[in-house]
Amino acid sequence: MAKKKQTRSLSPSAEQSEQAMIEGIFEGSPDAVGVAVIRLDCGCRKMAAINEHGDPASKIIMYRDNAAAICELCKEDHGSFQRVVRQFIQWKSPEPDHYTKEMITAKVLGG
Image (cartoon, rainbow, N blue to C red):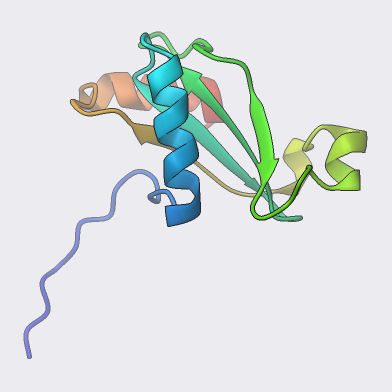
């Protein structure tokens, strides 16, 4: 059985539970080319729209799946970068070119 080789993208894709939130952020941020998604070790998430220059195009939204509020630790440290377990940018279609994506990723996520 031959398997189709998958090309690995620069970032993972959004989980189904994150997708509705991402779409809502895109809808409220017409200048956005992507949404930065930061997953924390506690299960909370931080998201924000970013524009073509890598600058914020929305406020930062923090939430936790199936919870009324974010956890107590996030309330204290605002989702410290030291607790990040995964971060990526979900790009809006049509996506920016490769070099623009790399520049935005480095500016927003530091890598």
